[in-house]
Picture 1: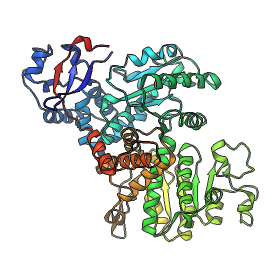
Picture 2 (picture 1 turned 180 degrees about the horizontal axis):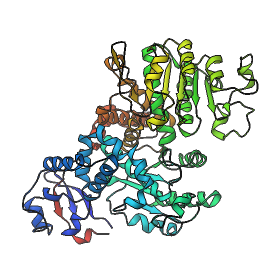
Picture 3 (picture 1 turned 90 degrees about the horizontal axis):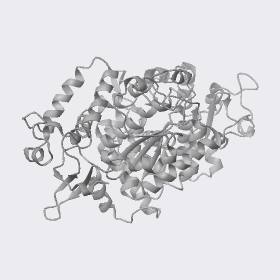
Picture 4 (picture 1 turned 60 degrees about the vertical axis):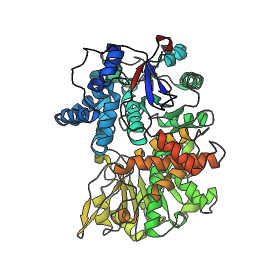
Length: 576
């Protein structure tokens, strides 16, 4: 049942909502509620007379009032709860407040505060958002999707809650992640909130704390596994394709052993991607491309060491390999430039229990012939840095202090401008701090981080650090694939986002130490990323065949700015 529809007046060209609800039902719908901003005419026509204070308030005044309330909250969790409450009352006002205060509020609506909120979600939830699909209702998947009141769903962010940030299995309480990601799609990318749907595949949990919690709101059983799990996901995907043709499906925070399989199973069948793999890879690759501009070198001149070859590490390795192959290396040659280190040490082709995605980057024994090792029989990170003469070091391990002073000093001996990417969240789990990297390399390291760090003053010069936040990629990639009507999201499209991102970094920003654009320009970033994806889709025969200028105009039109549309009452025949 749809509550309203987008309309355009054929005579005046005015855009408006045709609303099928009346009275208090409108005020209870967060996508329709305008609070005191309803005009006198709308109040009369929609049955709102007397249900609101007499004063008519423009959205600017509402934002000021909301910001005052937000700033009175004592801590970030209370601020998160306030913002979630505002989202549940008035989505337009929420997004106007968020877009005007993005730098301050992103850490509250998403990482790190959203992790704290997810740990407590069954205890702090005021009103559920999105769609919850479980073994108890999967048989009614079409009914579930038809119950969605939005006019037209174009984007779905879905999780099964098994690997929420660094917190593990949170079951249905992981729904805070898709809700947060949708908020960022709207605020940073400009997608209209009425097109975006968060979904939780509530297939149970193996978290004993949750199973024993009488207030836990999820499916109170151990997780589906094996064929039962993948059959469940298949029924979900078929339901998505049937009810929302052309939708973009983003896989979010699935466990590693399932994430890679789901991506491969569905990337050719439905427009979809995994942000933990592809978004992370594209963002880190953009930072490395900028570093190459600073160094005036190429990827083929580097030796890359990636520590932690899970989803993020593999996505980064895949992006690096793609650039190396663009520079003329074969696939095998490109992989030999990438040294993957995991818990046992350097991954070798004869290492036991290699995961499928790790095999591509496992080194042959011939590659380490003649290496001087601290201890025969194992090849540690220190051994790799020394013997491979690493020039790029990437950490995605969440192990604080892993990049020790000796390791960082060796990086400084290997390269005049070593690149250190410490991408773990939160700050307390960063492999090293930017300041530690600068101290160990006499201020020469090029550093990007996963968590936000303040600038460091080095020899009288302030050096800033870019945060490799996937926010730089996924909103624009989603917008570009939808506007460009891509039939699938390819690796080449994500490489195009890396190049577009790096190209936006100015000489002045590079001189300050930045490897990515500034977050204050995120709307412009999303536009450029969307354009790059749409152009690649077009040029590869997978999207709309429009000129560059036409694509630019369509993307600009698609980027919604939070404002109130005029409302006109629609016939109740519009329901259904």
